[in-house]
Picture (cartoon, rainbow, N blue to C red):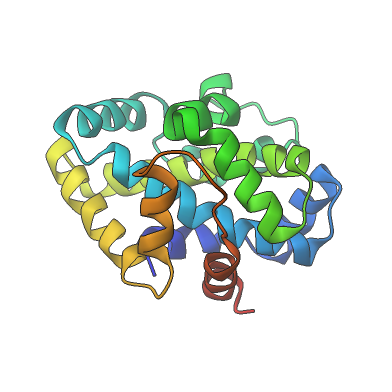
Length: 204
């Protein structure tokens, strides 16, 4: 589905999912399902935002300044289970709510409601979950930018390839377009994307 999501999936082992589920007060299997819906949707939003040169440049600056991938080595600090003293664990690198505001904009509540309906988690649980996933996704993206020394244009080109991968799935493209490219009226059913995403990330 996506090279970036495959990388993120490596950090979402059973222990990490258990930690996240305990933090938000949810069942681990239900948490996996919600992650399966949330991560492809967030990736779709990031690639959409980076479709224009100004979006590419803005994302490149954010990754260069605040998200170089170091957070991936300190997930306890991200998930709130360890008091980690590290330059990687700062308010800016872990501020999931602010990251989501920037990525999703006016669609934030709509996405949260869609993930909630699909997974059965409450919207408040989804809010907490997505605030953990956003820094994780940005960290993985920042690691890619740093390792490959991508320019803003190179980052945008790579992300366009990622979006094509998501849209080539049976369900991804139409759902992402409906969520972000059309008027924000009506509900969006993320159940099919959730099943596909959870299957890809967790093999179930």
